Image (cartoon, helix red, strand yellow):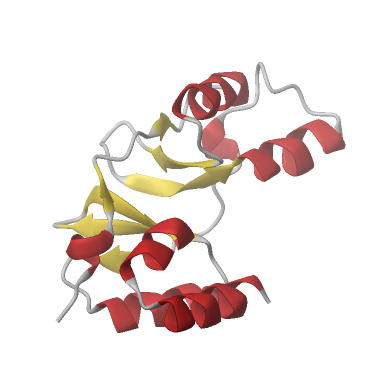
Length: 137
C-alpha cells in the first residue's frame, strides 16, 4: 500500500501567520513555489497561502501587502491528510476539494505537502492524468 508518507515532499517551509504578504511572496520566490503553509506561533497549521491569494485577495482589493499578514488570508479549517493515509484516499481528498496541494499531518504537526507534481511522479501516467484533470475541472 502506498501512503502519503511515500510520495510527500518532506520538511515544508511555512510562512508565519503574523508575517506580511511581502515576506510570504519573497519566501515563495526564493523557494520557487506558488503556495506555502501558514503556521501559527505554536507551529500548528493555520491554512495555505498561494501567490494567487496575494494578488486576488490583497492587491486587487487595494490592500497593502507590506502590512497585511499571511494569517489574514488563511480562511477556514485547512484540508489535510494524515501521513499514513492510503494514496487513493489522498487523491480522493484532492479531487473532492479540487486542491492542487494538500498538507500532510502527523500527530497534529505539519510534516509534508503533496502536490500535483508529487502525484504525477508517483502514479501510472493514465491515473495521474485522470487525477490532475479531476482536480483542475
